[in-house]
Image 1 (cartoon, rainbow, N blue to C red):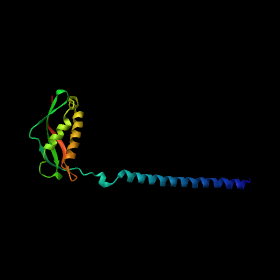
Image 2: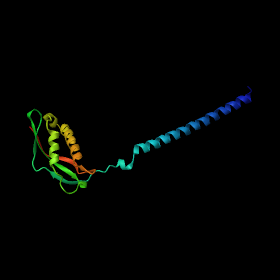
Image 3: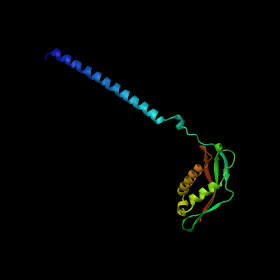
Length: 155
């Protein structure tokens, strides 16, 4: 190989690597840009789904008296509660009798130890609330949004 051929070959080699580098960078930008845009749209979700409408508070319907529920091992729970209704449920108080039945079914037979801790009470209250929401939903209108203890005594 002559000296001119070596110079020409050496001069062509960097040009190829520069072209290759530019192509790699361009492909990387396209892939990263497309992946970033895809992730943005996938994680963003639908704006209607992202902003779930929170019910507006309506009237509160309270029990007139407390109820007594049998717990496990001869213990009992004396409790009173009130239902926080939604504005969409109307201005008329819901029939509290179904809520009384659900309370008795939910709390009967529980251990006193389960109800003596905040974590235990919160877990049972969440279960009670879910049952209430299911029972007091008509035509996809949730009429009850929360339950408040007005009295809660175990013995």
